[in-house]
Every structure is written in structure tokens, then in C-alpha cells.
Image 1 (cartoon, rainbow, N blue to C red):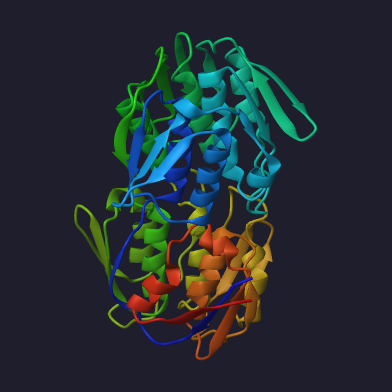
Image 2 (cartoon, rainbow, N blue to C red):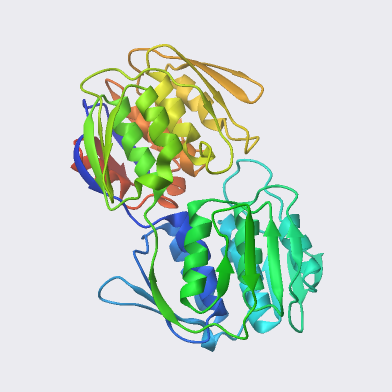
Length: 419
């Protein structure tokens, strides 16, 4: 099991290119199951979760080719199996995303109940209830969701809670349903919009994505097409926070500033000087220590839960006291114990972490507990005077492409060692 060794080494500086968004790439890959012709996807990030999804599609019989331009070609007309087995699903919760498109296209599906990061309850009942409302016959037995339908029917679906994967699954299923489907209380994340744009590029009729009401007019079939995955806003935010923690100055390229309004606002509160262009963001701390900021996570467009751990790391070395309240997942403070091992002054009261900033952290052996927690620990390690060993970094490989190479390019001292 690989580990990262990080040595505190002063401010980050320079430029870094942002990869395609994991949280957009995975549903887009799942949506290729809807297409009756070849689909070409560009800006696909090279991540473990993407590799797992490609393996899943391949096991179902899809024909997949990586071109010399690092585009991914998917032909789902060759699919022979409608089952997503536990061996592939257990490592990645996003595997549930094949449920809707497979059922809509092939009339049957069996998906193992998924695994993924241990950050709290993420029930799949909203996916199941929505598909049942569209006429699917669904049973959950022996660890599998098994569904059948002649053809899904359009319906009005009111989601009990905002769910990104639930919105995406039902939106994909509805593209081939008979009639009009309306999803109310839909997730508004940019990745949902990216999926809708991809579906429309294949001939779907999806409107309202980005609002809390999405309308899908079902069509008989979807064709092929080509599409580029949006930039990763969470990777973007992670590098910006790394520069803030180290009092540095960086420029991130090939990104989308508009998808990061809440994060940029908090970085400005922390004292960062931020400028933006169409596809770039620059951050300059002008050598200053960041100021502590208060954060409340909530669904988009509010502050993203996927940036909470990184801001905890920043507050740990900031000037003042920061209150971080996690409203999305109940188990997403597991990185706090690891930050405390590095000397951070943090008290957890219910779903709020009270963080009193200190000048520098101390390197220590720490363990990543989930994807974003591991990113927070890597950033915290940049603000130490000695070595930090981050264990179980397979989590970080699920969501960050070449993180050590990118950080090295900004001046960090970081290396991967075999376990």
C-alpha cells in the first residue's frame, strides 16, 4: 500500500493545470450506456475511480478504446450483461450510477449495493423510489438491487432530500422514458449540469439543469457524439487552499472560476488576493498567514462538503478561531484526529469543529480515512517543519490525478513510497 512522504518546504508558487472533474466524469461514463452509437469523451481524468468505472462498463460488454489523444471511445451497443458485480462496486459508491441508464436502455439491471468512502449514510432509497414511480419493478435482495421494466414512464418526482447521484440517476433514466419526467428538489451542482449537457449532446431533451427543477422529455433513443468533461472544481479548490496554507502564490489553469464562488469568497476572507479569467484563477497570499474563516457546508451553490477537510487544514494554521460546521455527511470529521496528531488545536462539538490556529503544525504519521480527508492531510503536511507520512493514499488516487507531480511542480517536497 503506497504512502506519501511530505516535507514542509515554504510557499507553493507557480502554475498548475486542472484535470477533468471526477464527479462529472463518472456519471458521464455511466450515461454512455444510453447511447446506441459510439461516444467520444475528452478531458477524462486518469483516476482510480475512472479506471474502476471503465472496468465495470467493459465487464458489462461495452467496447472501450483509449485513443492516442487520450480521449475515451465507448460503444455500448455491444453490452451483453446488465449486472454490476460486488467485486467492482464495493470500492466506489458512484457505481450506483449505472442503475438508471442500464434499466432505461436494456429493460433490466442488477447492481450490487455500493461501497466507497466511509463518510456517512448515503441511502440509495431515493434512486429506487424514483425508478419505481416511473414504473420499474424493483427488489432489493442478497445485496443486489434488481430492476425490470418494459419501458419507463414519465413521472413527477419530488426528492425528499437533495441528492447529486439520485438526481443524475433519475435524469439519465428519464431520457428514454415514455413521456415527460419532472425532478423537483433536484441537485444544482455544476456536475449535474455537465451531465445534462452531455445527454443533450447525444440527443436527449433535458432542461432546467442547474435549478431545483429539471424537466426531461423522453426520446426513443440516443445517438453518439463527442464531449469534454468539465474541469474539476474540487481539485482547483484544493490547490488554491494549498497555496493559502503555505502563504504562497499560484495560478491554476484550465478551470472554471464560476463553479467556485463559495470557495473563492472564503479564500478572500482568509486574506488571499484572487484574480480570475475565463479559465484561470490566481491566488496570492503576499506572504501573509491566512485568517481563520467560518464554514457551513451545504448543497451547491453553498460551500461544498468536498472542500471542508482542506479548509480545516487551513484553519489549523490560520490566525484566529474558525468554526467549521458539516451539514451534509455525519461522519466527515474523521480527519480531525489526524490533524490533532500533527498538533492542531481542534475541538469537535456535535457537527461543528472549533479550530484555533497555531503558527506551524508538526509532521507525524497520519492515515487517510476518505478521499477529501487525505487531501486535507497532504495540505496540512505542507505547513510543517519536518516530515509527514500519509498512509492509505489509495483514497487520494481515487480523486486526484498525479497529485505529487503537480505539487512538486509548485515547489512542494513530496514523494510516493511503496508500502
